[in-house]
Image 1 (cartoon, rainbow, N blue to C red):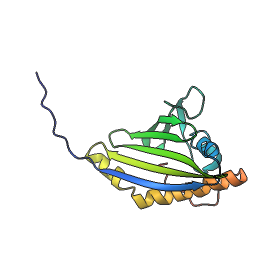
Image 2 (image 1 turned 90 degrees about the horizontal axis):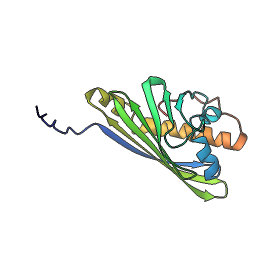
Image 3 (image 1 turned 30 degrees about the vertical axis):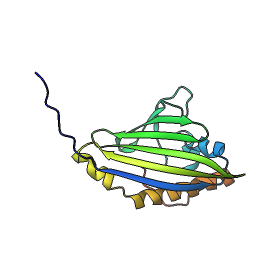
Image 4 (image 1 turned 30 degrees about the horizontal axis):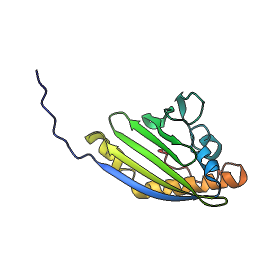
Length: 166
């Protein structure tokens, strides 16, 4: 029996562009954008590695986080581009795309674009409940944490806890 095509419904979607500046080379910054290395500089980071041939970020690396998120490295071009796609089953899909470039001897600029899409009506609050302003606040904190680590080699632990979505 033939199936009837379902109508396409415009999903809830949120795209946010966030410029970041880091006090390190693109190689140093890129190395920190790894689920294993994030333990070094993000005090509230946690994940469970599912698959990685190298034990770190690489194309096809898979790990899980709290809130039922599965993360996959979907682009890996050291030291300039890395992208993660996250899925919350039945709720949403989100990509985090970082593009890094040298802006000086020890300065790297990054363009971060997050794109969140609801997978259905249940996912709308997941997408729209974490606003562009919320994301910018989180990434300003992550920028400060990374810069502190790049400058001192130590984790910045006296900052308030951030939303665990990144």
